[in-house]
Image (cartoon, rainbow, N blue to C red; front, side, top):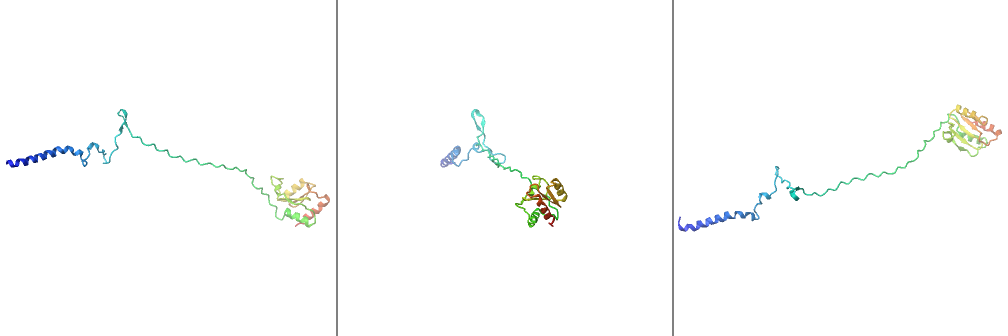
Length: 200
């Protein structure tokens, strides 16, 4: 080696020494990688694990407070409407039908009129045949000022009632004429009975 090459070797050694000494300044460079202790730790899946708990007073570990979740709103109970209780109405009274061939009470009234007999203010009172009325079990009733006409479902029932009203009634088949509440003079009753007998 000649004396002329000595300065070049010295410059090269100085450059190597400077490069080796400046390695500690990498941490100050913005592109330098952060130290391993500042990177988040990863679990076995390679994902970042939860940060370690914070230290509270006295060195005890504390967990960060989570905001309180509001309780789910409970549905309001359904409002119960008031139910109106209506009184139970009794079932309609079903009267027994008059027998086939027997005249209706109104037909008897019409026959009296045709015979020139008084049958003023006729009124259908068939509802009185039921248990809420007289309870006689009749089929029809038409009351007039002169006489009341009853029609029964059979002749036996008519005969029983006629005997009960003995002296104040007249029976023909299922029809009974009642004079108890009538204003018909006793002398005129045979005319009503004749008109009923002539009714076919």
